[in-house]
Image (tube, rainbow, N blue to C red):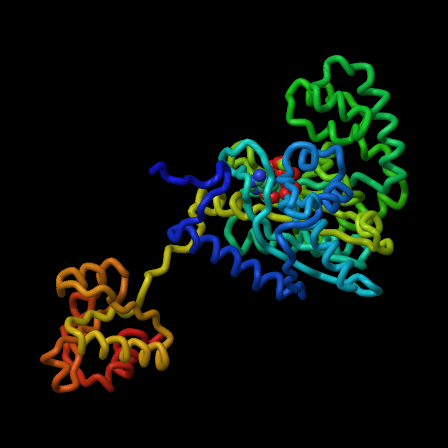
Length: 426
Ligand code: ATP
Ligand code: MG
């Protein structure tokens, strides 16, 4: 029978790769706690309308990338393409935004129907951070400084560039929109199809176009920074001053707009050359209008999301990930029913008394085959339970990585102490 394959662009993360993921996730978890962020979890499926209303109808995500389906009730649902809208929905619905500040984070799979390639999947994973109720550049700065610390701790900071821009208040963007429209209309026929369509609906998104001909046309286009009003400028200057004070360097990128509609003022991306075309590992910005847009009270908000696959690829490319830990510290070898039972009990006892990983041989096998597995497990020591020694309450102890350590036979109830003293003293 034909084998059933996974869905294109939706990858398995195999046991050899999970240590890198766990290492990254643990670093993030500890770091976020140090800044006072709390985890929130929300469903993977939401009403399609949530994303249409937040991300925007005229965006790549909503136009082309969303996994939308009708459920059995005929409701239109979508696999979440990102977390911000879900987070706002969850906070709003549960009263977390009422007269309060929130510093939150989440992690999990996101779904976008894109062309799969290196660093681009259809199911990918994000770790996202969102804050609510703080309107100053201080919190924008905190988020960025926090990410810089994470990159430093992961050993990838030197390969990353912080790209920063302000896309201004909605008044500023309105003025700029007109100017950009005026400029681009002259070249309408030369624009790529998507951009031509966006001319009428969302011209700022054209700045983000990946089509080289369109980018060439944009060379002499009006620049957003020339249209920033006083409020926008003050916010941006405040952010830049704080980044400088914290020693976080950045590159101004006046074309950075981000692919989602809800952003205003601060936008930023961390990018690298080390991953080819999919070089953005983390992206975010301020979205003061979104909560209201989704039916809540006006609430200042700023956040970002990092792409876990791309960060793992970068860690791999730079060889900064930790070595895969050994599967076990102790391997239990046993032959015969009584010995197997004794091995099981001893393994439980060792797990009670020592903080070591104990791998119990299951499924029988000769001494030779069990020792082969013991060796492969990476364990430092094998405990050998055999009928004759067991009869006198004894167990053989064999070092697996240290040729200088002689094999010894000791009493069962001395094993824990011996292991603690001779093998796992630190
Ligand atoms: P891109 O320009 O690469 O398509 P984006 O602007 O669509 O990215 P965001 O919506 O800002 O991405 O998501 C934040 C981060 O999530 C990205 O910077 C990236 O690291 C990661 N990401 C987004 N889409 C994918 C994907 N299809 N596969 C893997 N990672 C992704
Ligand atoms: Mg995208």
